[in-house]
Length: 176
Image (cartoon, rainbow, N blue to C red; front, side, top):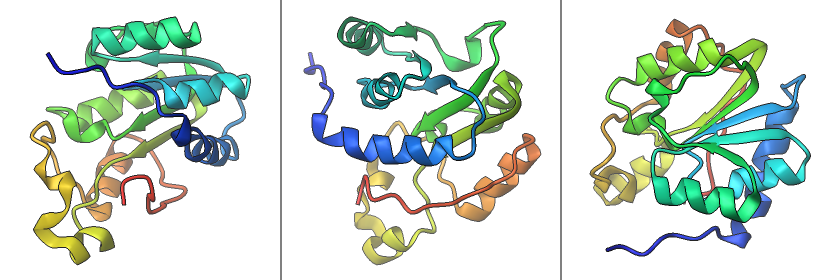
């Protein structure tokens, strides 16, 4: 059995930087992280006093985040997640490329947001400068669980079709 990945304290400053940028666009503090993994982003959200909860499909990670941070983590597939709550912020870090139907996932995101809600997402960009430099040596194209490959142009189109407007685009330093 594979060992359980643990939260990396060194990742917290980058997560804090990302969250503070998100907060520039949000007027509320109710946050849901879709694909919370080992909980680093949620730990920062908790530290910044946000009303944060997560959603994680992997039971062992959901349990670990609940135990470590005493946060609510829903254990289910996002497309099957049901709630009456509406969120001010949805975070989807490197998750969209794993959905069989990413458009349906984005539409669900839109339905879970308050009127002026913010969706922050990251996903590998098949047309990025990083990929153009590294070509087929870019490790993001070797992950077997990645079902979709996006370009910025294509991602903007499906975001618009799901009801979103892109306010900012950044190049990640997290995976370079």
